[in-house]
Amino acid sequence: MPKMKTKSGAAKRFKVRAGGSIKRGQAFKRHILTKKTTKNKRHLRGSVDVVASDVKSIRAMMPFA
Image (cartoon, rainbow, N blue to C red; front, side, top):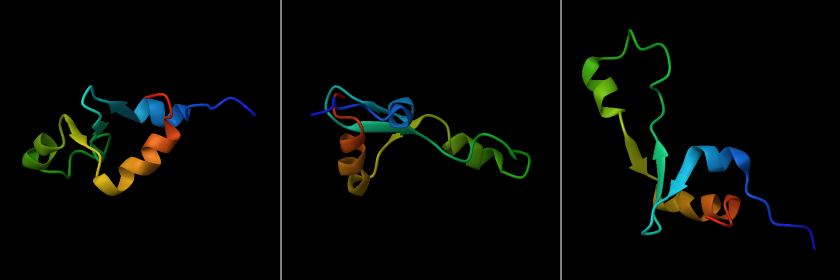
């Protein structure tokens, strides 16, 4: 049986908190920021929880997290 490996792309994008919830960074904050409003950019700051329907697939990509 081969070793179980963590998907490196998932490991870079997601972090598992101590309570078990998974956090991710916000999208749409990298470039073309001139046409986005200040309010929109402000709300894209920080990290948010992963949607419940995606948690199962992310946990499969990160078996040791």
